[in-house]
Amino acid sequence: ASLSSRSANLSLVARGETLRTLQQNGLTCRKGGQVATFRVSADVRAPDEIQDVILLAGKAHHLPDLVQMIQHAVGPQTCVIPVVNGAPWWLLPQLGIGSKAVASVNSILDPENRLSALPLTSIVGCVAYAFARVEKPGEVSVEGPSRFVIGDAVGGTNTHARTVMGWLGEKDALFQISSDMKTEVWNKLSLNVATNFLSVLCETTLQELVTDAAIRPLVTQCLSEILMLGQACSIEGLFPVTRSMEIIGAGGTHATSMLQDFRAGRPLELAALGDVITALGRHKGVSLPTIETLLGLTRYASTRRNTTHTKGTLHVH
Ligand SMILES: NC(=O)C1=CN([C@@H]2O[C@H](COP(=O)(O)OP(=O)(O)OC[C@H]3O[C@@H](n4cnc5c(N)ncnc54)[C@H](OP(=O)(O)O)[C@@H]3O)[C@@H](O)[C@H]2O)C=CC1
Ligand SMILES: CC(C)(CO)C(=O)C(=O)O
Image 1 (cartoon, protein in one colour):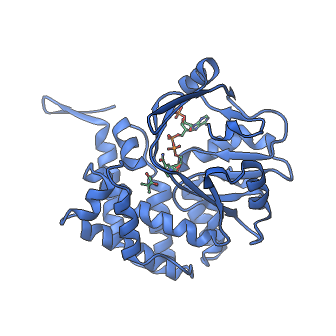
Image 2 (cartoon, rainbow, N blue to C red):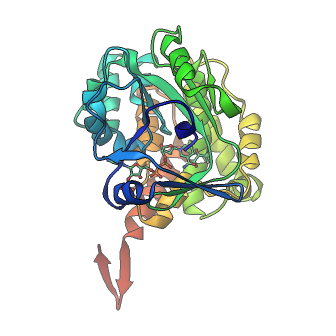
Image 3 (cartoon, rainbow, N blue to C red):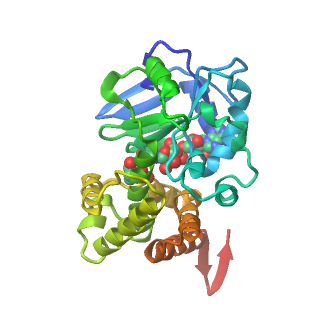
């Protein structure tokens, strides 16, 4: 919605009920008590013309399918920006684990290797700090300020990221450029690993996670483990645990995106936030007992969510 007010020719890719609503009624956004509806062009796939910038805003497990909807619109100069949580596929070759391990960890995120259709030189990495939720198809609410940190996935010159800033502008400081995306991704990943599983298991808010006497030590332990793994991957400038705890607490009464998905019966981002991390831990020889336990319990809860007990019989939907 914010982008549609800029001088860009904007198209959205969507499916099902969301697509129908966008085409018929436009995109409705709620922010700070204000409601605005934007007329947008929407279809099941990207326009045939080569695009300047493509934002891939979906859950990590949506990316391989989403790429198929847009790859025909990627030209030599196109900047593709995956706006996703978790350890992204483009970061794996930068973690010092060797090419065999990269391929093996990558297969967790992208079993059919579809993301390799995007040249790494076209990728602008993005770390999202936002509290947004889909209220119903075609209707999104955003709470508080949002911030998106971007930087070229490879090359280190941020040539593409600067081009993107030229297109998206610096209005509202919505987008910021970083010259160290490895650190940016890992710092955000740490917050997600330390809170998303627990938010589902305890069905609670970010603030509660860092104030409750029983849960706080688990958050701290997850942060220490992911910090150790980041250091083992030679990532510098990572937040100390105390700083991450402050950031989590500042999240207040918000429900994490994983808790929202859990409540809505949608698949959880367990691969990008969990399986990839435990696999990296094994490759680096870093033990992650708390993260592994919480990941296992969250997977159990998400499987069990789809079951009901009636008269002693277990029904699996
Ligand atoms: N929400 C937030 O506040 C934050 C989110 N993030 C991260 O950002 C990323 C995006 O999250 P978010 O926007 O909340 O995700 P949502 O699940 O709310 O939205 C993803 C959208 O992508 C659509 N989609 C998925 N696959 C396809 C496809 N093949 N074709 C067309 N549409 C498709 C889904 O459609 P459908 O509804 O039909 O499934 C859905 O509307 C995630 O990694 C999340 O963890 C990070 C920070 C904050
Ligand atoms: C850190 C947090 C909670 C908000 O940006 C998030 O990324 C999520 O909801 O998954």
